[in-house]
Amino acid sequence: QIQVSAISKLRNGNIIVAYSDLGIYIINPGTMDYRNIPLPEKFKQMFIYNLLEDSDGRVWIGTSDIGLFVYDPSTDKIEQIGMFDGLNIRNIIEDRNGQLLVLCESTLYKLNSINNQFEPILTNNSELPTEIELLSLPNGNILLKTDERYSSISLDAPLQKDILSKFDVIIARGRNVIDIKEYDEMVAGKAEIVLPSRQNEINIYLSTLNYG
Image 1: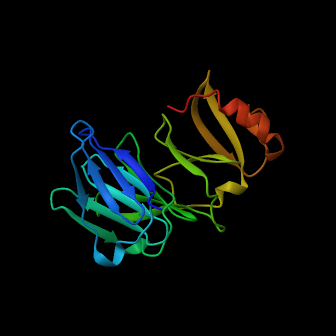
Image 2: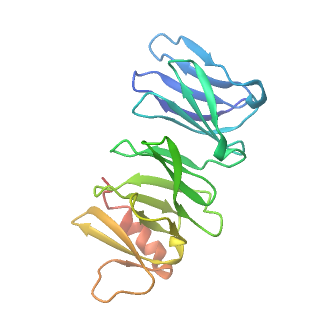
Image 3: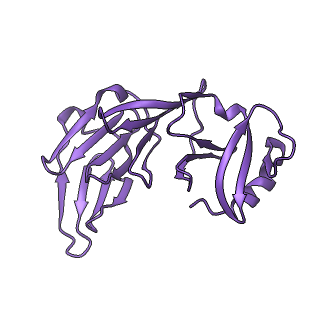
């Protein structure tokens, strides 16, 4: 059975859709004209999880077990990013400053715009949860959100390891989240300490906050 595995809106208003067993199509919703993006023969059966158009007009393609690809509309060609070969791409985002981020099973990477190479900024000893989100915070950090944790990640800090084992401190101004910091132990005088035993209560509180 053919299914839509990923869908995204392009800046020109067109829709890009990935179908299981059919590949990737770009659809004009006004005219319903469409065209297929040609995939290399050996990748035609890949399952696509993520589609993201970056600020340069390239489309990044995340797959379940073949890694990361990028489509350049100016050449109409798809290139595989070799260092991600065989990996499961969980999420792809571009923050408000144009920084591209790619999340794999246990590592978060950023694209270095100077050398065009991906660099790890966070790694976890165990595989990260299946349901995971990446959001931009107003201070330029990235919010990594799972069912159990909310963690703030600095894009400029040295490689961070095992942040999911720390305590979260939410720093909010009114209902607007400014940042979320991690501590190895409870910190006296800090408000809104998130503990696993209070997760249900915390989830209700966090759902009322604005993350920019």
